[in-house]
Amino acid sequence: MNKTIALIYGDCASPEIVRQAVRVLDKIADKYNHTFTYTRAYMGGEAIDKFGDPLPAAELEKCKAADSVLLGAIGGPKWEGLPGDRRPEKGLLRLRAGMGLYANNRPARIWPQLADASPLKKSIVDQGIDFIVVRELIGGVYFGEHKTFTQDGEKVAVDTMPYAEHEIERIGRIGFETAMKRRKKLTCVDKANVLDTSRLWRAVMHRLQAEYPEVEYNEMFVDNCAMQICKNPAQFDVIVTENMFGDILSDEASEITGSIGMVPSSSLGQGSCGLYEPIHGSAPDIAGQDIVNPIACILSAAMMLRYSFSMPAEADAIEAAVNAVLDAGFRTADMMADGCTKVGCTAITDEILKRI
Ligand code: IPM
Ligand code: MG
Image (cartoon, rainbow, N blue to C red; front, side, top):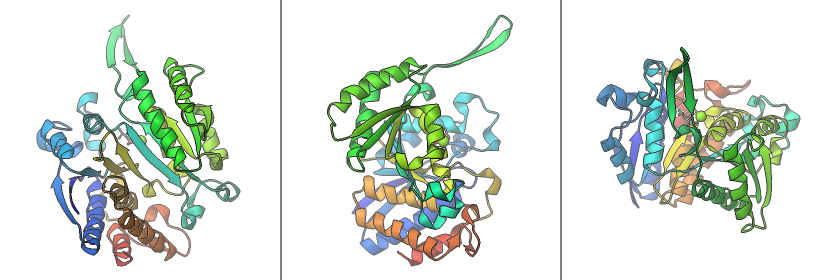
């Protein structure tokens, strides 16, 4: 198969991981007789430096024209002082919205080899951690009106959180469909004791529920959910939630699995062109040292093969190679444990490549 992949190298330590993911994709292309053609797109801090804009229209078009997009992570101290609409993060939000990627899928699964790295007690980890956060990605407070004004001699800031029924319905449906392919359990996470948007979410979810009688459906307040993820993560199969709650809970969910450096994500909309990115940030503190963990980005590439290119065998090959490398005791610094071999970003990828 011939596929075009738009690569966004990203900021700080991010280019280091994207380069490794490309090595893995090249190995897959070679082994399975595919041709991957890369186009480079600029977004985030890099685009600000080059064009003065975190996502120029031409860069968005490059992404939309590709068969899929692979991204590392964006942002960093260099761009922190910029106004909200010119920050690197704004480029990412515009990319997600511009591509219509409303469904963000963030798996939280314990790698048995990393169980000791989980901050949770062994007795909790042993019950199993294997759930997915389905996060609404292009609505809610991230995309509502933001403003700061002066009132009675002081500054006041307002961020609004709108949700229309159709936005809730399409992500709610992804939640139910995802649950149907797994253990058939869906938890809708909200703050329905306080927010109107959450009450609307529940009303829409109840309508959908009638279409999926096989799914065991429940609802949970987000504060309780944050606590339950630490206390009893085994209860979760699929969590569906609005944009900001999903942002927060997916960081928590990834950390309990051992390392946030291991968690990939997919973002999809109507078509098969998606955006694949690690859920972690750009790790400015360790940039340029070749010590960052590239696995979340490599696994994001695997997700791209699976979900956008329908190449399950190729995706399995990458995931199996990562598993074998962990079995062999290789670890980057973020997941280092006693008795393991500490390696850098390039070296751990070398080990993965050997096993594909
Ligand atoms: C994420 C990140 C982004 C988000 C930031 C960089 C805007 O935290 O992908 O989770 O909040 O969505
Ligand atoms: Mg986040």
